[in-house]
Amino acid sequence: MRDALLKFGSLSLATKATAVYSADVIDFGASHDAEWDEANSPDVVVKFRAEAAFASTDGYQPLIQVSADNSSWTTVMTGPTVSAPVKNQVYEMQIPRSDTAWRYMRVGAIPASTGTFTAKTMTAWIEIGGHDAA
Image 1 (cartoon, rainbow, N blue to C red):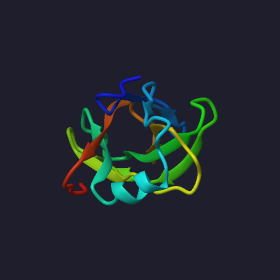
Image 2: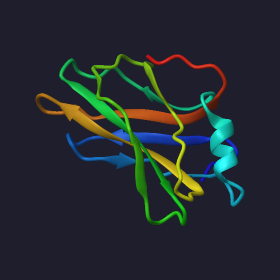
Image 3: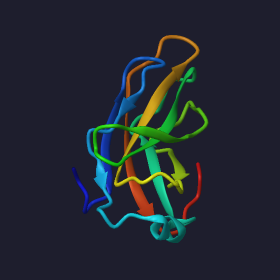
């Protein structure tokens, strides 16, 4: 885990329609509660960055998952398919508010293609402050 850095690390997307999740998980600590949810919006976002240009027929659908125990995960947000991102293109999602008690967060993505998906790598992290969606 890389709690202090708020980085989820790399996601290696390889197989079309098969979700891949970050190996690194962020632990928000036992103090995460509804007050934190109220304070985070809209300035806390998860950013996904393509490390190389995708083929014109390829893309990905970003996911955010949460867990109370770091073993059982619930998808709380699914983004739209980001089609044919170019190298370093960033897509962002606001961290969701949730009535469900959770402590841990990880991200994922589902590779999409209208043909054969070409393997790509992405990175993901949490950023605080102003944001612009790609």
